[in-house]
Image (cartoon, rainbow, N blue to C red; front, side, top):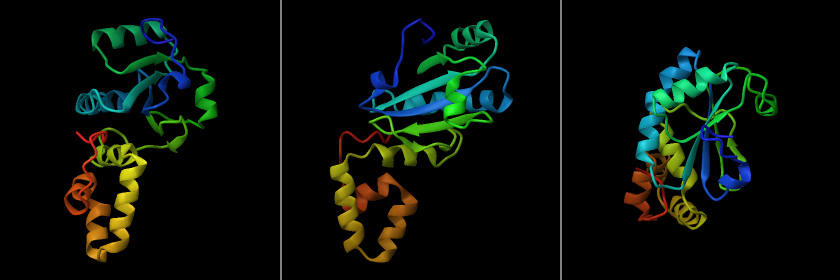
Length: 173
């Protein structure tokens, strides 16, 4: 259940990307990612993505206190220190970020952290509708190699400029 006691299932998250943060209140690097995660959540508010934080804290009261005091956004779940999720996803260290597609399939089992400057671009690329990806693929095939390199390195904004991809459903901030 989430911080309010509501049950959250993978099925209830289908239809949107899911960016999962596995963390704990006692973990310094996890806490260091929180301001970056909050900024990312604000940038993508109302877009096609769920931000899910799963605590592996042993002390549930410490987790509840921190979530409430810091007014943490996104979907806040308590998994406990012996949760099966950690074994299922082969998590042996935290923080760990995982990206799931709209169908709940793993896109990246060790996704980039929110503090990584490349994370927004990667999320935007994952969120592009298939029709836009096909347009991009067509343009990549028909453009000189210098344009492909610019698209590969520059992210979605370059795709918009070079290819004319203008999807309103993209989650780029």
